[in-house]
Length: 259
Ligand code: TMP
Image (cartoon, rainbow, N blue to C red; front, side, top):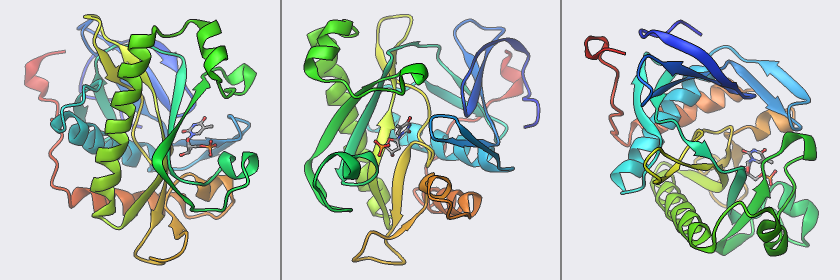
């Protein structure tokens, strides 16, 4: 990925799909979206030129959509097309999965058919720990870990459901069926809970309703890698193209502003 038009500080964190850097202003960090896709908890890794830019653009627009719906996120602005500036968050080690339809791991764990609608959407919490394989958390395990107070848990789940509802509705208008998605949250310096990480087809399932309106539909998400279907970058391009039709204008970095 090209170097961004700002002075980068030290690398703070490297995940499977992104790198997080400090900037000259401690209020903001820079995120680089990598041209890499991983599956099977990082055991399979593929280089896919163009993927980083697409996930950055898609995430910027969807964060903007949620901010406009009143949900606090870490997003500040795009820097070029493969980087963004975000507010540093103290991340909560939870993967918050919202399921609008049955797919993926749920099919292996419950007697349920692919695509069965889940109303209200199912909210599953997983402990974010690669070495442990991100285990599912029961109520008792969550309480044992003492990750969240009961009040913070209610706040997090309310925000997660609102984000899912807003995204599901906006994407449905583009004939994209948001089957499920994974969200991550953190606390900013003032103690405000915010949505972090990314909002891209790496972290959700999107079924194309244009091709098969009455059946599960073509996957326009990372299932293309998980299932060896190929065409991942083309699918993400299609998602980015459709999302542009929402007319959202994510803020863009002005190099004259400093940093
Ligand atoms: P699952 O079917 O594997 O439980 O995944 C549910 C959703 O969460 C799906 O959209 C993919 C997403 N997800 C991630 O983004 N990261 C992960 O580590 C896992 C396990 C799932």
